[in-house]
Each structure stands twice: as structure tokens, then as C-alpha cells.
Length: 389
Image (cartoon, rainbow, N blue to C red):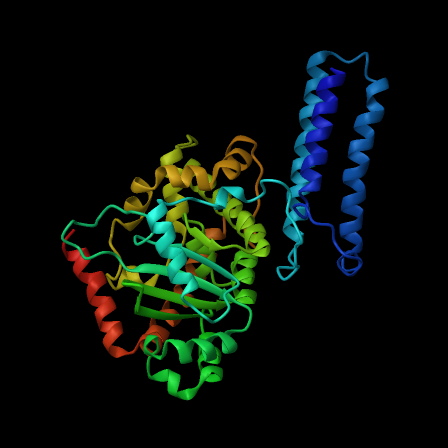
């Protein structure tokens, strides 16, 4: 029994180490903790100490009683670490390293040829990119596409430190990627980018023989959305399998919590819809569907009506790999996490409201960033694909 108790104590201690998921907080960040935060830390420490002291005083308890105490102690430790993790919201904190394998599930692989093509597209840009990933049917295969379809457009997102600087350099290198907004200058374009979800898209760009749509977002806005779900635009995209082309430890840290939050809601929704029974396929469908709650493109018929099923059915193994440690943590070990202000009960309504707002502004903004011709071309491509299915 001593071995069992020590094992559980180590589990709790390990979860405590994941409070800020590895990094040590600087003196500045420690000083920002409230009195309530310090009391919470002290309470968790006392829990562990009481567990150790109890080793010598509980010899008279039955094995069942001691096991119940162990499980209760473990559950309290898990709950406390989940609560404290949700309070760490400094999304600009610069991590020098993360614990071994933390977030390694995000590093999905694709076939070597596609990997080379994606890296070639990324390195063709002279403007500095801090973080980059590919997503969508041009990177991961989906159902709903026919052989006669043209090769899907490759979708990319670039996280940059200084959007105005990026656009200034990129306009010189690739002026044809931009609409007439480029004539107003890079400062104007970067400010226009901030509207809505903070992403500036250039669609139908011809790069290395591929048709590419790339979005530019500041690292601050990208990290903020992953941490707080303030727009759920990037966070929702990254809850589905993505191919990371250039990594950043901050994004890796916050996306891991983003995935855990998605799993927390999806588990709740799956059990609710299946009368308390869990189904893994439905679980991933719930995750994939979160980013489409309230999306105006569905109301306008701009997305395939079976898009969620198409995404999951062709990428089930990618979902399993992408969520492997999260699945174990949330589904099997019953650990939960959500950004502040969210609960499993209110998440659906909150997300629907935020997604509706961001999707409307991004759709309208796209008319200006892409230009009328490219906007019509993009809308027609989406609509014609729906008609064929």
C-alpha cells in the first residue's frame, strides 16, 4: 500500500509540475499572482504533505478505505492543477523549453513529396515568418472531392511578429498576391488586417506551381486566440489536424491547452447526445464541428453540408495521433480544462456568438483583401464543389 500511495503522490506532483506546463515563472510573473493563487498553491502542497504523514498513522485502515483515500487525494490534486493551469493566461510569456514530448502530438507528418512542396512554398517568402502551418484539403485529404476536381488550393497560416514589416517586404516581392489595397501601403494593410479575427488572406497566389491561399496574423493575436478563444478563428482551425511547417514553443504550449479545451467540450457533448455512452468517432466529429458553430458560410451555402463528416472520415488516424495524450488526459483520466469564462454548459452558445461575429467580419473583409474577381472565383469554387456532391 505504501507503494500505491507513493505512486499516487508522484502522479499528483507530476500534474503539479504541469501547472504552467513546464516553465518556471519569473519573479515578475510570481509577483503577479494573487493572494488567492498563493493560498491555492499552499493548499495543494499541504495535501501532498498530509498524504505523506498519513503513511504512519493509517495502518489500522482497511485496504479499501486506503484506496478510496488515495483516489480522493488524486482527484483533488488533478482538479486543483486544472484550476491553476486555467489561471495562467500570460500568452506572450516566452518559453525557453517545454517538458519532454509536451505537444509532440501536434507534429504530424505528411508524405515526403508534399512536405518538400510545403517547405518550398514557405521558404519562397523573403519576409520573416515566426510560425506557420498548413491545413485543409490541400494538405490533408477529405471526402467530397472527385477525381475531376482540380487540385485543392493549399491553405497556409503565417504567424508574424510585425505585420507591417511583413507586408512591406512581401509587397515588394509578391505585389501580384495583393488586391488594390496594396496601393495604400503596408501600414494601412496591417491595420486593415486587425479587423475581425486579425487575419489577412491572399487567395489564389501562384507559388512554385501551386495555387496557395495564405493568411497573415500577428503572433500576439494568434496566441491570444489559442489562450482565450476571443475570436475562435485560429483556435478552431488548429483543433483539427494541421501540418506545422515552422514551430514556436509559445504556440505549441497554448495549442496543447486549446486541444484539451476542445476535447473537454466534445466529451461533454458526446456523452449528452449518446445518453452517457462515449463514442470515439462522434467525439472527433464534435471537435471538428466546433469551429463551424454559427459560421455564416454554412448559412450562405459556402461550405459542404457534410464537411465535418468528410474531415473526420478521411483523417480519423490523424485525429487519433493529434489528440493522443489529450484523449488519455480528458477521456480516460477525467481531467478537464477550459479558458476562463467557459463551462461545458455555456461553451456552445458563447462559441456560436463569437464565431458568427468573426466569420461575418472575415467574409466581408475578404472581398477587399482578395479583390472582387478573386472573391467571386473563390465563392464559385466552393459552391460548385457543393453542387457536385
